[in-house]
Length: 580
Ligand SMILES: Cc1cc2nc3c(=O)[nH]c(=O)nc-3n(C[C@H](O)[C@H](O)[C@H](O)COP(=O)(O)OP(=O)(O)OC[C@H]3O[C@@H](n4cnc5c(N)ncnc54)[C@H](O)[C@@H]3O)c2cc1C
Image (cartoon, rainbow, N blue to C red):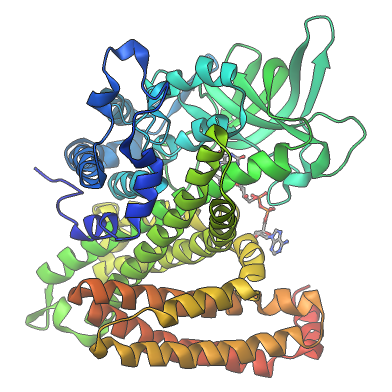
């Protein structure tokens, strides 16, 4: 029987990253049992649930991930084709999943995997984001559309981070038990990339002292969820993000699901248009902080999830391409023997490894700051701990859009090449690769398009944060046979610094925006190159991967640098004139 955890050693390799120790020690409060740590109603003692030390915690993650891997291999992956064909249906204002999706959801619920990151006291598993996203990666490899339902655990996590204790006690166990799924309700017809334009109204009904929602939302994944977070305009007369608040909506009959979209891919995931008519809801956190604080946190978690989804789809596409290339013979040889094909296969394998290492580095940054935020709820942090929290929050803010933007584009190019390797067969619906190609397409669009990720990442890649990361990576001690790769990466960094100077010289934001994708991709090549070298230092199997990635990345960066040198500020006029 297939197991998506045990058949992919690279996931365990990242789980065993030495940097996990500090995260897990903090997450488990040095393995001491604290007040209210467990879920009283399940009858288990804290001793049954809490790991006793770091090794015990890692074994526990590994065991749970093994269960996820088994469900993916035995249930989710075999169901993917029928889910893609059948899709969800809308009957009497209720969305019904495809039969296979129901089976998948039941298996995940029965294995208690629906509240992985929630604290144990609400029935969760207290997983760090790093280990949870390993589950998201595997689910996505099995069926990318299911990840959209499984990955909505971010909703519960946002409630846990910002709601008051009463709301948490009332609602979080419903997520953890699998009784409730979630939805993240932000987008409207006139508010897509620009969420400041959200216009769905929230008003406080004085008679009942209840907030009510009125308006239309569109493109909402799992809009039929039992529990949703809704971004709405609570402040009359405002027009920007400061007039928006976040609300928890517990499904009743005041919301009409007008339609389910007919989509190119991720067919198993219902994308809904919804009309709110005096829908009662609960304010989460403080008024006016909806977009600027809570939704930003929610979307950062979701973007990390799309990074994991991209890696999962890419892994599946690479495996399909490799299998096909080893079996298909032309001109008397299997096609994997031809340079035109093996170059593509190697490129795919290297991009998957680069995406994965960036994914788990980003997840560790997220874990580091979040664990300090959790501890801050319990006690005052020391000055040093506060500084650590701030440092990792900044790093997470920089790497999350970088990850989402770059890995989703890699995922698309890997799925494209996987079709190419299948030749005409790839264009037919007979092989999973056709579905993977369609499913891949959404990763660079939702949760903020690549263009928006680039705008979010550009601040990081042009700031001292990038320099700080470079210093850290460059000063890490690696085996002598890897040092020449670090030398190449230093050359790439020097060229990159020159590129930044050119782009910043005119002091013109439009010019910076124009070259921003090139700069972000250049920075990504350098960062992922360093991460692969560090991986190679821990396991020599990554050495050739790092070599190929850097040998390809260096000329790619030089090409981008040359473009930046060639297209100067005055040329923007030509681009504008021709685009109309
Ligand atoms: C299948 C699916 C599921 C979704 N699920 C959810 C969900 O669960 N919840 C939710 O709230 N939303 C959801 N969405 C909405 C999704 O997040 C938006 O579609 C996405 O953010 C883009 O917004 P838009 O479609 O309005 O495109 P637009 O914002 O109109 O963008 C169109 C184009 O303009 C570009 N663009 C826009 N602004 C800029 C800029 N400043 N600089 C450069 N380029 C720019 C974009 O990159 C894009 O290429 C989903 C969408 C889809 C398709």
